Image 1 (cartoon, rainbow, N blue to C red):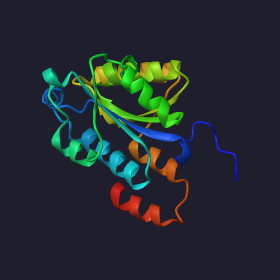
Image 2: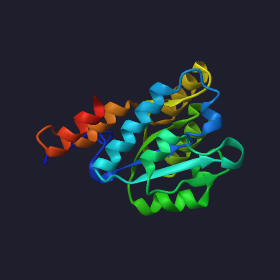
Image 3: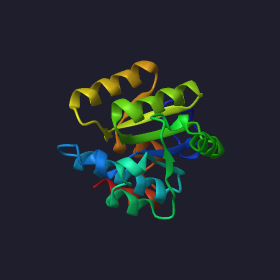
Image 4: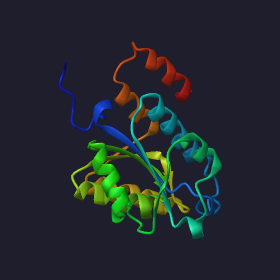
Length: 186
């Protein structure tokens, strides 16, 4: 097998992290549909390939639960409720991600400059290799989204897109799984 660059996502070493797609947070967005759609594609992709998925909710008593269109894709999984902005600030999350034994975290969520950025920075500090699907993340203000992405990239995270991440994990086009993923991507 050929050697791949360490920043290319691999099926055996990747997990998906879905951060805080919650009702009251998303209600403050002008047009969340594009990044919600990218998140849903990533979840369907991860489920198709049996990649582990971790899902969080930030203070759901105040911010509501995960929006229905995302939650229905996560059937069979339970959210990890947290009050720390960084997912790693919650011991249940830190234990869950450690048990996965996966170094590469494909990250999507809201808000980019708060919970996503703090989680990604702490993931880097803990030795993980987070890759942020920028088109599956959002902030209420575009400038916050852009600066959040810039901060994560400057700290050593890789920025990617949902589609790029999916094709990296797939690696090949001559499989039955590739044909299933084409239906998700389109």
